[in-house]
Amino acid sequence: MKTEIQKRRTFAIISHPDAGKTTLTEKLLLFGGAIHVAGAVKSNKIKKTATSDWMEIEKQRGISVATSVMGFDYEGYKINILDTPGHQDFAEDTYRTLTAVDSVIIVVDIAKGVEAQTRKLMEVCRMRKTPVMIFVNKMDRDGKDPFDLLDELEEELQIRVRPLSWPIEMGAKFKGVYNLYEEKLDLYTPSKQAITESVKINGVNSPELDAQIGTALAAKLREDIELINGVYPEAPLRGDGGLYLAGDVAPVFFGSALNNFGVKELLDCFVRIAPSPRPVVAEERTVDPENDPFSGFIFKIHANMDPNHRSCIAFLKICSGKFERNSNYKHVRFDKLMKFSQATAFMAQKKETVDEAYAGDIIGLPDTGNFKIGDTLTAGEVLHFKGLPSFSPEMFKYIENADPMKTKQLTKGIDQLMDEGVAQLFTNQFNGRKIIGTVGQLQFEVIQYRLLHEYGAQCRWEPLHLYKACWIESDSPEAIADFKKRKYQYMATDKQGRDVFLADSNYVLQMAQQDFPAIKFHFSSEF
Ligand code: G4P
Image (tube, rainbow, N blue to C red; front, side, top):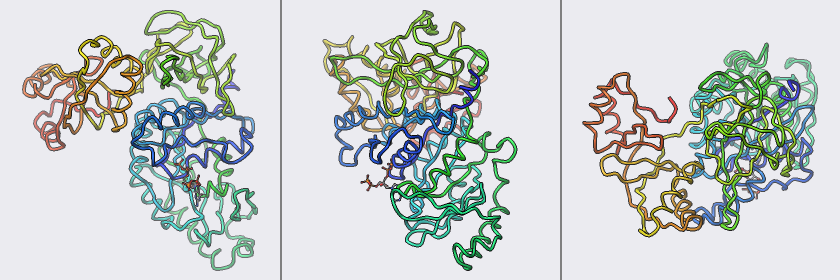
């Protein structure tokens, strides 16, 4: 069992839309032999034309169930790639996916650099100390100076970086990369099927380098490498790869996913240094993937939009041990045993019934409303995994009942959709009204549509101007009581009944932080 677990690499690729995530995923699958032709991976990117038509998005999301997890074997490793929705309105989904991975690859476009969405996702990685690797894509196009880009990466992503490959020119003049990791020169030929021509160079001072790329470029490369070795931390790969594994340094690779250039080098380094499943912290204790019996948690629930088939798929990340078909497992929240005969694994884009799966794997459990995000399954022990935070939403609306005959249906619908993690619900303590908070406008449409089609309930939205909802906490019960009294119009509770402060502007929030030093304001639900 240990060997099985140690060969697992479960990760997500994150990027700003259009940086090349789909293209890179596809090339990785090609290397793994999971697909055989380019173009086989359907982008779950929501097409730009369809941003206001969310039914269209749901059709595309249907496709994305199949591609939610892509498992394949490569050089003795079992690789699980977790796909993340490209559309920023589904960012909450991505945050949660990041709780189920052991490492992350970030794709950055050389011309665009770090964009807003990537910055936010990186915050989640930083919080969790997830090891991160960066692939700078589209080197076949002109872009930023690589040193400037490294500065930008460090500043924007707030992580130290260390290039493991280095580009020689770019755009039309792109010659290839020098691989600092294996000390070889990878020469670039622009072609979609290109197989990289690699030349083993005996160190960067070898005259072979001049012969390959010319004296001028070789001199420039030597200068660059000297600078890199001087400025960036010791290769994070030496020894136990500690700096990378601790989430302190991100190795950087340069390439072109579309031209299949630099991808194999990334993958080869990735399988070697990326972590296998890591210990997971539960409220009760830390769970060891290799030595503990089966445990796992639900991080995503995918609802079937067809009202005739109300089933969902609950995605479970196995944290420890081995899952076996038809074994009894404890559903901790319900304190009851459940057996799964139809769990699915995701291999090579096909769903197949799984007989056994190991820590690191993701399996899909057919669900008829038994699960909610964060639920734990174990071999018998009572465990609650931490680290599935909700983040302060960015958009808020009051939700009102538009059909008084269907109050019950509405309540039930809201309840279940929130359990699925579609959005967050707060109850205003001042007027008792229900507030829905999301990270994107589309979520409101999704909720309204699903309430009607799945629960027969009708809702109406009313505008609400809020800047942030933050969870408050203090060592002093008096301070909390005083704060709640003074801010009574702006207090709400979340679904678990915890106190939440509704700040209607950044200024108000800052003033509150200044005026109430005994109160801690949190922007995610886990603190
Ligand atoms: P995403 O999933 O991150 O949103 O990005 P995706 O892979 O879909 O790539 C976005 C666009 O960038 C695509 O072009 C893709 O072909 C292109 N691309 C990806 N990698 C490279 C690269 O290394 N070099 C260059 N020059 N382009 C790259 P598109 O025109 O939007 O789509 P398509 O019609 O090619 O599918």
